[in-house]
Image (cartoon, rainbow, N blue to C red; front, side):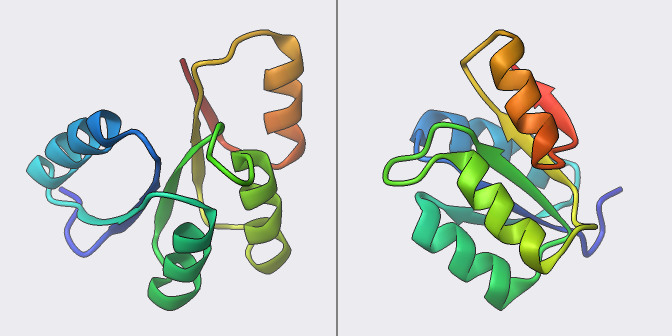
Length: 104
């Protein structure tokens, strides 16, 4: 299914990374993992992933800032934003960065 499609997971929770990796690899996607903002941006620029799964609550810089940084360079790469937060303010903030999907 996902042949040659690279997915960058930017997430600091190892349990979530493990779960996402398990399901995505089983479906044939190539996985890149970054645990923080710096790793995520470096892997984005070095590897040019086809899709990004981005944690909204990263240490050092929140996922919205990471998304904004990526959007300055690329407005087309799909970014799926993960969050444990809820509410309209979160959804509005994510929509303003052109994130494509919300999962709670």
